[in-house]
Length: 339
Ligand code: FUB
Image 1 (cartoon, protein in one colour):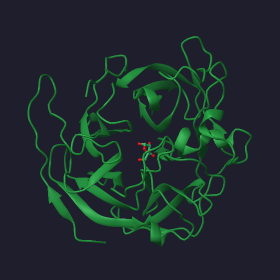
Image 2 (cartoon, protein in one colour):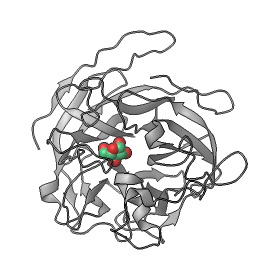
Image 3 (cartoon, rainbow, N blue to C red):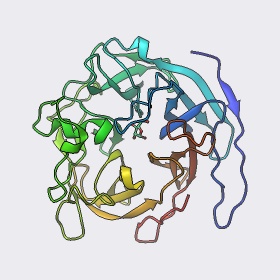
């Protein structure tokens, strides 16, 4: 790992917001921030965007990231420390290319970093790496998690200690290639379900106590509209695209996600980590840039959303992470943010 570097983010009062969201760090590009509080400190597990000159396409080949840097902060609005390289593609024995959005968890004295990367056959799988420190360096397991697929792992530990992983993303995330249960490389993104068919849902499974394998077969998560029916594939303002996240508030489970080509962050609620989840509304309107990806975390009794946009570069594949407060109505409904 390289030596940590620190940055104090710009901040300013703006309207009713306590913090005007500015890039948390400016010396590297970061995206897809998964934030957690471990031992009272805030850790952010982002993608590390780089310029590789890959042509832009709907498969996301231009998101050709190679390593992860973990960021930490003592408080929201405080100094941000970049802890240097925590895991590099070259140290993942089964990896091919494209280290996308990661997440992390802590259990039994060990930190687990979950990451999607294409294997040597160009199929996205989810891997896991371990460390005794929240900032790594992390050591990758020799193989991907058996049964894992697609991208954007998000790991949630419930109050009973059980841990679940949510994963998946369509188009470049390859979820549509798994429709039959087996990977079908011949299917281009146009072979998603037709517009009048049910949309593809994210996948999930409970993790084993060792946090390295799934304890059960991977299942599809159901996201329903107010009419109790699954969203149609053509309903691209509501249907799941990528970037799922689960949090619990007042005993309810909130599953939030990106709608991709309509650039919204939306949420649905349910009574179990397995769902079904019923759509509730928009958390965040479109940011600058194509992708939108977030995490939601409680810090000292307040809730925050970490997300990214392209303020620093103006380029969709060179993003910067930000944080802002998440506000709720007394009944738990989340107020829409205009970033
Ligand atoms: O960063 C690469 C991909 O872009 C992520 O996996 C998606 O969620 C989107 O943010």
